[in-house]
Image (cartoon, rainbow, N blue to C red):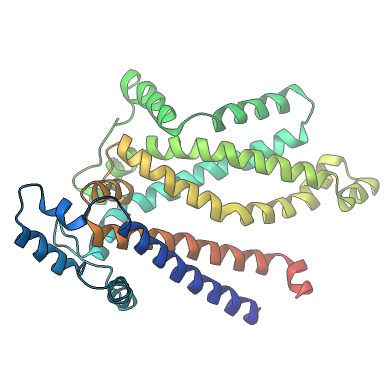
Amino acid sequence: MIRYTLTRLVLLLVGLVVASVLIFLALRVLPGDIATLIAGTSSTPAQIAAIRQQLGLDQPLFTQFADWIGGVVRGDLGTSLRTGSTVASELAEKAQVTVPLGIMALTIALVFSIPLGVLSAMRRGRPEGTGLSVGAQALAAVPVVWAGMMLVVVFAVWLGWLPAQGFPRAGWADPWAAFRALILPAVTIGIVEGAMLFRFVRSATLQAVGEDYVRTAAAKGLTRDQALVRHGLPNVGLSIISVLGLQIAGIIVGAVIIEQLFSLPGIGRMLVADVAARDLPKVQGELLALTAFVLVIGFFVDLAHRIIDPRQREAS
């Protein structure tokens, strides 16, 4: 287990290095001169040159990358050109919205998809199983923006139960208001991601039904459903753990869109605004932080799968 952990840790570090190189190069190949775009059309050549020097754009690419990655290693993700604040401090502030939103959305997706996916598989060929499968297919095809707009129309406009947009100025100092502001965005992401996870859970459950150990348990006197619940579902749970990393990545992508739709002051909305403003140091830090978060989640998912599944430990 120690060797496996060290191997995965090395792969994590390699992934971070590759991601940092790709992020750095991708932002350098954007059309137009970044210094000119930041300075504006009415700027003088001297002002443009000063901005290029401030950003280090007059240095070779390798020197620029080395300076940036050296700051990252020291915990310095850069400083925003627009606000003058450090990227790390602004990420920490916006994470107070995005992280709870992601946790709520993931919880909704799991609560919605796991029991219904298992039920649909256990009732395969029956009306309720077919209805659940068709409903999940329909939800998975719904654009997340359209789903959010429909929820706003129903629960904010017609019923008036929840706020349509915004986040309380006091933040989590007013926990109930903050929680209510995140309900509709979390449900929007949760039902769409949950519909996709539903199909995976259903498929994994159907596969477990056909396994020899489930048939053997049924031959010893258990019903098919009892054999599946006692012996098949633990293996379904291992399969779910394997795809959690992808689900979390999907939730992060969904949060970028949903924060725009619901006017939430989170990381996704900040990233879109910074890309539009060509705030290069801040965009670099934000993209690297998000990539690192996804890779770290994948690292812990792999470790959890290794610890829980005895077959992998025995194989090693």
